[in-house]
Length: 131
Image 1 (cartoon, rainbow, N blue to C red):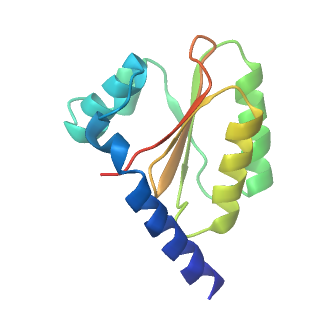
Image 2: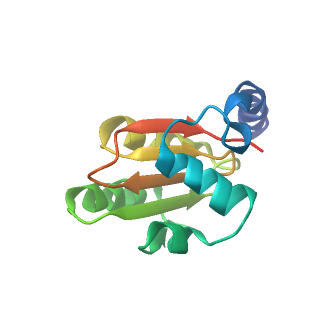
């Protein structure tokens, strides 16, 4: 029952995040290029767009994801952490929200996955993107 209410709440949140659909109302050139080039038009992969590899969280525990994120945030090089299955596990969603609140990163919530970009030149921001 708890999982059903979590999924329902995520779906309703999807309806309110419609303004970032297909890149509309995104003023950051980095994020607009990411949304249009990688997710909407699919002209390139995420690694091609970023220029550095992305790290998948996989089936790690939330504590391991948090330590991995703090290690990536401490390095001066840019890094990307991808956490999938957010719509199925409440713990993954909570840990991603905690990481985006504590670390200096650009976080993107795409309903079923979160992307955390640790880049020293990007301002701290959070996006909800649905399409």
